[in-house]
Every structure is written in C-alpha cells, then in structure tokens.
Length: 159
Ligand code: ADP
Image (cartoon, rainbow, N blue to C red; front, side, top):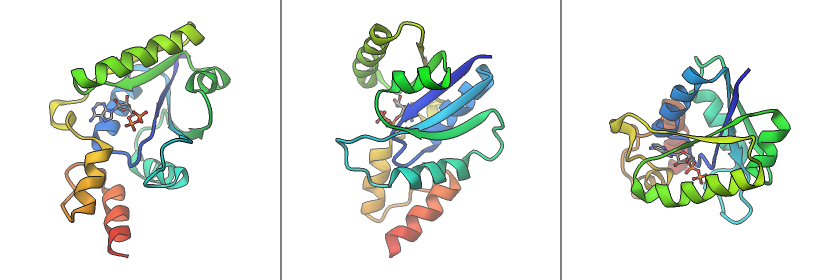
C-alpha cells in the first residue's frame, strides 16, 4: 500500500491545495494531508481551525485523511509509514526552496521520496498569503478557497 503525506501550513487551505490533493489521491492508495505546527510562524488560523476547514472541504475523497503534526516532517512520515511526501510547485520561485527541502529530507531519510505535483493553470497563482491580504482589505476570496473556508473566514472577518 502506497501512503503519501501532503504536509504544509494550509493557513488557510485553498483551491490550489485541494487540486494537488485530488491529483495525489488519484495516484496513491492513501493520502494524509497534514498541518504542520510551525513554532516560528505565528498562524492566522489555529492548527485546529485549519484541520477543521480541510475536513469540511474534502467530503468526497475517501482515501484522504487529515492530521496535524509537530517536529520534522520526515519523522512524521516515518512514524505513519508513508513512503512519499507530496509538495506542490507553482512557479520557478517555489523551485529553489522546494528543491533544498526535498534534498534535505532525502539526506535525513532516503526511504521517503518527494513527489512534486502541479495544479490546473486556473489554480496555479493562488496562495494562502494573498488570500489573507485580500480578506484583510475587504476583497472577495470566493474564487480562491473552498466554500466552507469562504463562509468561515467572511463570518470571522465581520466579527
Ligand atoms: P508551506 O508553509 O509548507 O509552504 P503551504 O500551505 O503554503 O505550506 O503549501 C503547502 C504546499 O502546497 C507547498 O508545497 C506549496 O508549494 C503547495 N501549494 C500551495 N499553493 C499551491 C498552488 N496554488 N498550486 C500548487 N501548489 C501549491
């Protein structure tokens, strides 16, 4: 059984993330989308909120599970028996960082391989940080995020 993890901040999860997740779910037997606790970055949403919103956004993907983890991604991958780590690539600007990350991970544990996936062009430019900026300036984020995220964030913004 091929198990893949898709780790990230998902602060918040976007249509770009979901497209990557769907592609991965079509390739691997099981995909675990895992929210990383990041000590350095102060989150916009809590890890619990991010997990809840991902769960609400992936209803019909039955080989997908949602989780959160602390510490090194590669240790988490080993712990749950994943052989593959999924990362998304948007543009050349992602490449240098992602390449360094994947080579560091393979130096730490060569049994877990990184697989890069891309989205459909219409989701390619979407990022969690631009969504937060649009939201903070009163713009419409409905095109970029799944419905449960849209509802949650617009309600939260009005409070
Ligand atoms: P991180 O802080 O770990 O980069 P993110 O939540 O920003 O976490 O992203 C998780 C992964 O999803 C990364 O590999 C990122 O490149 C990828 N990703 C995010 N948005 C998109 C998108 N629109 N198209 C393709 N990949 C994406």
